[in-house]
Length: 287
Image (tube, rainbow, N blue to C red; front, side, top):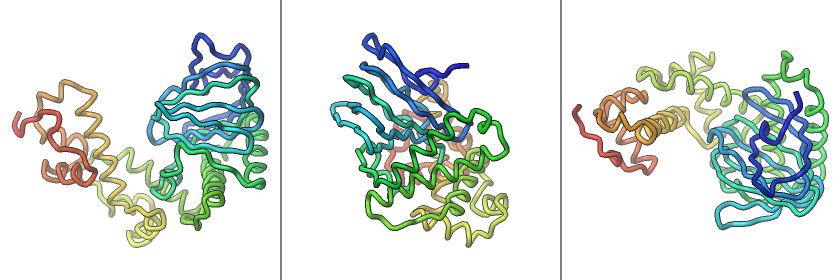
């Protein structure tokens, strides 16, 4: 089935491009595509915040707009955008680029997030590596169903991390092996964080690691496993409070329990650490 801009997560307006080409392979953790479009505008369809969208300019120039902020992405330049970030693009002629989407916590480290939604000049060797990988993968449809498809996330993440480190002059924080551990940990946390008994010890056991080793890996990412579990529970609690109006009439205790917190006090403390006002959704402490 031919790929379209919509399948890549773009919506075209009335002045959208008249012509386009999308070659893409993907699975549930990564997406690699090479794209060109004629003159016109596109809007990025928001997706999950855990996903990072990467655009690398190859030929021509695209103007990206984030709210009132505008910037131009040209050849040999890269930009990383959080999956839930709303932005649009417009180009006056042919614009060719590589587009990746990665579900990887390794490139969502605090050390990298200041560089999101910023134009990054790529070193020649990193630009060549990204474009070569894109050309090879995007035309190899069989790879998305192959046994090695899940392992590609580690390689793709490593390339983007190396490109960021080289462009920003930072020292390496995670090895590919450590990035893979955090990726697996993130998947476990995603499935088990709503269990109040799930903690760092349970996470380490499921990964067949010692708690000490797991903490060392997270330390290299300037995180803690406890913080990662808490952050996911906070996200779930926020989702309950903001999306489902029926929960507004229920008790804070029920919300805390549904998000994986063992008590109201634990949830409120987590909200304070994440600078969220507890009780902002007019919840009572009793049903």
